[in-house]
Every structure is written in C-alpha cells, then in structure tokens.
Length: 164
Length: 440
Ligand SMILES: Cc1cc2nc3c(=O)[nH]c(=O)nc-3n(C[C@H](O)[C@H](O)[C@H](O)COP(=O)(O)O)c2cc1C
Ligand code: FES
Image 1 (cartoon, protein in one colour):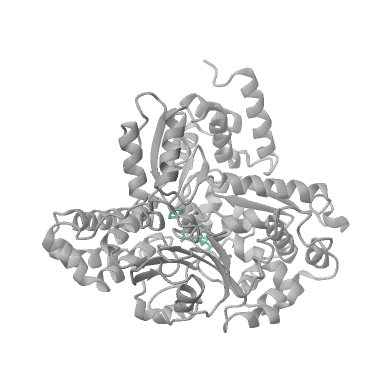
Image 2 (cartoon, helix red, strand yellow):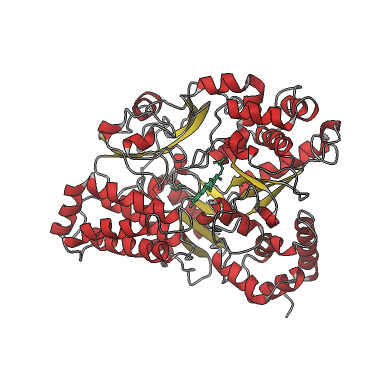
C-alpha cells in the first residue's frame, strides 16, 4: 500500500523540496529530521513504509533512516490517539503539581503514561522540560501548549476531550 | 507570568502589541544596525565592537562571543555557516522561546550582523521540534524580512547575500550541545563530536561554523546600537550587558527578568520576583538549570554571572533559576534531574550512559524505599567516576548536580533511608491560580 494519498504525496514532495533547497546539493541527508516531521504532520506518526520512502527520496541507507527515527523521541512509532497529551514532569512543573495532572488523566481515561486509551481517543506521554517553566505546570495538547494548568483548567480539558 | 527587570534592552518591545511584526520592529528605523554593518563596517570592526562589549554566550557556557567569531578562518575557500542554537532544553530555561515569540526580528537582525562579521551568507536556526508556535513566528518573520528585501540575494540592497533557514530538531536534549546539534542538522543521530577540530574550523558539512545561542545573537543589535563599551558597562566585570533570567518554581511571580549580570540571586528572588508564593520559606535554589549545583538560602548573595558563580561552587548556566520552598523533597528533585540526564544521554560514552542510569536507580530506591545506608556514599562515588571521562558535558552536568544535593541536605537523605520512604507530601495542583500569579 502507498504511504500517502495522491494529495498527501504532493504535499510531502512540495514541503520536502523546500527543505532540500536549504542545503548544498550533495547534502540531501541533512533533510532527514524535517522529512520525518513532514510525514508526521501529514499522518500523525512515522510508519515503517514512510521511513523507506524517505530513505529512497534522500538516497540514504535504510539503516540510517531507521536509527534516526528511533533516536529522536518526537517521532511516533505507532499511530497515536486523536488527542495527544504530553505532560512535562521536569522539576519546575513537578514542583507545581505535574504528577497530579498525570494521575488524573490516567484515572479518567484508564491508561498509563506511554499508552493510548482503548477507544483510541487519548495518548498520554510524560515528557521532559518543554521550555514553559515560568508558566508551570504545563502540557502540550496535540502540540499546542496549555500553560499555568490548575485544577479547573485540567477539568475543562478532560471534559472537552471526553465530549469530543 | 511576568516580564520585568531594570534594564529592558532585549525585552524593550515585549509589552507592545504585535511586537513580533516587522511593522513594530524599530518603527521606521528597521534593521538600521544591519544596514550599518553591511555598508559601513568591516568584519574586523564588528568583531572588535562585540569583543569590547564582553557579550558572553548565553547558552550556558559563557564563552566570549567576539572571541569565538575571531576564530573563523577566512581563507579556506569553503562556505562559512552561522548556526543559531534554539534547541533550548535545559530544564528551567525558556528565555529563547520568548525572544522568538516576542521579537523575532531582533534575532534576525543579530543573525545578519553576525553573518557579516564571520563572512557567512547562510544561517540555520536549529529550533527544538516542540516549539511549533515559536517556529511559526520565526518563519513568518523571515518571510516578512524577505519580502521587504532585508534578506535575500542583496540584503537591504547592499549586494550582500543573506539567507536564513529554520530547521526542526526531533526532541533530544543532547542536540543542544553544539556538535551534537551539527550532527542533527546533517540528518544524523545527535552524538556529540570529539573536539578538536572545533566547529569554527570544521563544523557543518566540514565547513567553518559559528554556533551561538538565540539570546547571544539577539543581543548583537543592542551591542551595535549602544556601542560595545556601553554594553559592557551595563554588566559586571567581564560579563557584559543584561541577561534574561528565567525564574520558575515557587516564587510569587515566576517570569523573565532582564537584569544586569552581577545582580545577586537574593535580589532577583526577593526584590524582583516578590519572594515566595505563600507562607513557606525558601529552601533551595537551582541557579542555572538542571546542570548547575544547588544553592542554599544563605548562599544567595553571590553575584549572578559566569565568573562569580564558580567561587560559590556552582555555575551560572542559562540563568534558569528554580526556587523551591520548604516541604519540597530534595531527593525527589535530584531524582527527577537524574532521570532526565539518564533519558537524554546519547549513549555514546559508557560513563555517562551507565553512570546516569545507575545514579537514577540508586536515588530512585532512596526515594521510593529499598535503599541501604551505603547508597548515599555510592551516589557520590558513581558521580565521581563520570566527571571528566566523557566526550561532552552532559555526564559532567549530572555528576556535578547530584553531590551538592546530597551534601547540602544530608539529614533529609538519611531520613529517607531510615523511614524507607519519602517523608514529604506530594505536590498538588492549585485549585484556581490567583489573578496575581497569572499576571501578564
Ligand atoms: C548537554 C548540553 C546541552 C546544551 N543545550 C543547549 C541549548 O539547548 N541551547 C544552547 O544555546 N546551548 C546549549 N548548550 C551549549 C552549547 O554546546 C554551546 O555552548 C552554545 O550553543 C554556544 O552558544 P553561546 O556561546 O552563544 O552560548 C548545551 C551544552 C550541553 C553540553
Ligand atoms: S519544567 Fe516543565 S516546561 Fe520546563
């Protein structure tokens, strides 16, 4: 099966072309991380088929593409839920109650950190500092930052996801 | 959170609505310092001005920026690259994100001036992949600057070619380390390189490369505008200018405070940040990010700058100040940092890969139960075996952070072992943030 639909394929090619234009002609491999980001922007994750496609496009050995995908934590190896919650648990967030965010999300959606809920609705990840320590505690909801989380804000977010 | 401080140089436009737009930037006098650099100044003159400003690298190590630029060879026949480090991953640090969000054109102007100084025509801003919002801002700013003819084949009509590209990282703290960053930018795993050769001679694609932190580069227009000497005078001794202190933890007003180097941590916390949030006293201060040794409340009169902090047994780091109140568990704090270093170790050097893991494991059993008395000494011993035995400073950071956590709070560590559990309560979320704390 093809990795992309025809529309997705042309978006991939266009965006990858812009990235390649940044680098010297003999340095196509430099586009690798961006290529995976583009795949993930389109599909929500980076499946094996896409790794093979990217390696082909950039003329790289397959093993290089695989090792890079697994080295960087942002690339999802499985299709995540519709709502990806990444809760920062580093010290500035932890000292203002981040663990309570994690515990509540686990309880309400019946999952553990790193898991996707059985209904495929929510994926929870605990992550390291996201550069939002002055507005701690925080989480990223599908990549967008939710800052200064208090009990009320957390409850609202959970309800919003439950109602989706 | 608050934006404050006494010397609003880098933050001068941050309170203006739409401060990120070109139309706001410098109102009519846009990119004047870049124009001057491209038309009136030689590379050597710019480097001299920056050397005289005592501008220090804001990414953590404090290397003098002008000196770094002067190391770039000009006669290799290869292209020269400027790489801006926007990977910002040091726990507690968020200043670069705000520079990018609130004043991206200041950063772009700094990039242009730095490029002229080192003879570069191409700059890459390597931004951590999680910064989606800041990245959108940057891309928009670059598009604005290109459309206005500030960037491109002939920057500001001067004939000097200037291209700036934004490139995303993949979520790895180690890629903030400059040579690991170069590997990532080349599309590889972020394994730090052995130095020498230094990037100034052999960096990106084997070409001469200068790598600077976002704040370092964003300071350059101010240096050029006020002159190196005036910038140097604003700071303290060999640390020129103001710094963006990023404060977090249990202070009343977390936020970014632009203050001169040499301000004391006591002034920062008690005068600028309003002291602690509630009734509880201050217990400990992590002064410059996870990599910097902790300070006790009685040690806060040390001046916050790169050269004074080593005398207090710590480091300035990124100016990421995390203030912790009484009741915070220091074993748990140390554990969170160690788990972080263990998770982020690239795995290349055995002492770091294994050592950070051992440290996290030992401290984990001290926190959660199952430790023996000798485990406290074991932490110090393992840490000692890491320092100085690795390619980059990640392992050193873990190994220098942990021992003071133990030594300065020894009774607390012993109590964990005696009780076979953590004696401190869990941290709780606030019910509703008070309006004061949500200020700004
Ligand atoms: C483990 C590690 C992580 C680092 N992370 C960052 C970072 O996120 N941002 C940064 O600017 N510098 C970081 N640095 C410092 C860089 O290696 C380098 O010194 C800096 O980017 C140089 O720029 P400057 O001289 O302007 O500070 C890190 C260093 C180490 C050892
Ligand atoms: S510690 Fe959570 S965003 Fe920095």
